[in-house]
Length: 219
Ligand code: AMP
Image 1 (tube, rainbow, N blue to C red):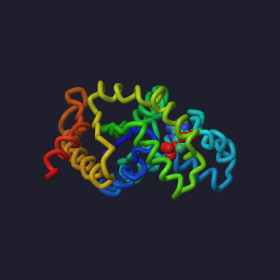
Image 2: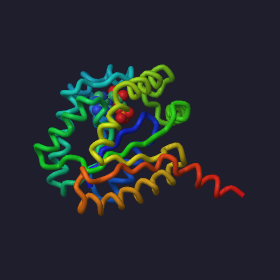
Image 3: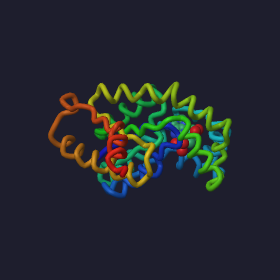
């Protein structure tokens, strides 16, 4: 499976990325984690990107794309599967990620979109701030990251919809429930990936599945 995730900050892409990677035994490539590790280790790259991370701005494409290329090459040697978490963040990154994937013979075959609303995302990010002390989980920076997501990242979802590789999931529910739904949807996609060409597939939209379930479960 070669999966990329599109999700606003706080939707749980790190957690779900780890679950997916463990389930399919594939590499979890999280650009935010890689960048934060550079900052913590005070590498030259870390020093160059620290201020971007601190204020919630995007790191220059060249840096992120070089990271992606290296990580995909490693994933290729480790069996070829991957779940990309944090890339692409812009349409330009989406195209560049596709180009790198083409070059390496490993373009994504599933784009997973985690849907959640801003109010819930802000609540989760502020709760995380109390536990993890991430420099970018303050109210101002959260607002900036959400705005950047809406403006630059979200429009990419439509691109994957048109390519027929989109799977949309409602991420407003508890993490285990979302995880189970993602894995079930990806297992279905796994059979399609092997048998049906991208252009002949339909997008999978599970974003409304939560409400009817919740209603039937109530006494
Ligand atoms: P994340 O852990 O995915 O929320 O990313 C944390 C921060 O890392 C972001 O706010 C950006 O500053 C930076 N970052 C991560 N991925 C990218 C990317 N694909 N392009 C630009 N900046 C990124």
